[in-house]
Length: 327
Image 1 (spheres, rainbow, N blue to C red):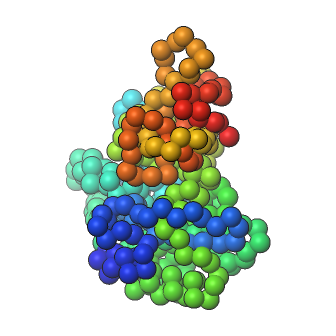
Image 2: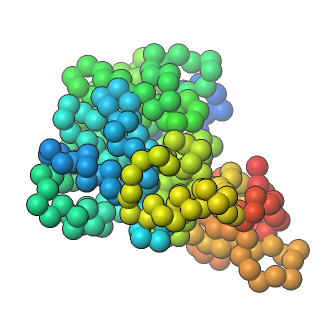
């Protein structure tokens, strides 16, 4: 994370200076609009004459659809079709910027480097150069932002914002100076309410954005986390790593899992990837996994209170030992 941006967030009580990877819990507003820092996400720059060709052979979505006015969403998979990481991708001038969990960025960069060989492709971690801000608004607020799915809008000074594939959610990116100026303008003009990143994660869970963590990497196929419903899989493009499994699941209709929103009434915490079980059944087989939770510090002993993205087998609703409720 950029040091100037980090210090700005600490001075505004938006992150905890004793643990830079954690955010302070703050409930999001029930209505209106809010912005929140996304320090959990990193940026990987992909440039060169062969950049698109390289990515096209590695991701589930069609890189040819990504332009300066249209972002993309997708996943990198292993050979078995299991998701290594999900991502957003934007084009800024001739540069392609992958936005993905910062905890997975180094491993993914190393993996992509293996495929470059003699291709004209350069990879660069831009996490310290650019900052990310999430935004959310309801129908009562007009922020004059892109209103079409994955539409990208270039703002002044070459910072940009794009709309998520679902709901009224956006992601802004720019330099540290731009980020601080943007935050102050939006909050001081009372256009939005400044929130912690943790509140932003609650919004993303409501929107159903399937960010993969280190605990859930290589656990799901793309359809299990609903990427096919978010324009994150293109079944007409050419081959890519894991494509055979992903396509077979689609055309044979054998995807048994899907992702749903859920909440728990228990106050302790659970690990992403934790298995869910049905107490009303004698079966010892797991009925699904937690895909994403609203907290970072977690205890795997119980399902925590709060909101989750979970995968459920065969689309069924279950009561778990900790009263997990599928919404």
